[in-house]
Image (cartoon, rainbow, N blue to C red; front, top):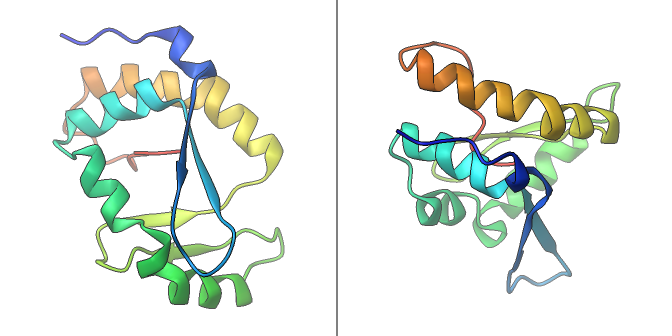
Length: 121
């Protein structure tokens, strides 16, 4: 049985991609989100491949043009496996400090839950 490492909330992994523009992607709560992916048998490399900026530029650009009133937008990964949503700084803080740890604990108890899974932040 996996145990949630609360210290993982402060760790950040950085990925640099070769795309025709400057882009840096940081993964927050990497240990906890990795455990959430593990529960659903999703390998980190599969998520990274699905969300690779080079393959999703058109979706990101199109979604950004239709952002809602909050400025947030959704888009499907190029392979249509994942939905990506942008969030505000205040929502980010709540998500990383409060929601992610609770989701992990919840999904370990209720594996068949229909609640939306969050595999990366």
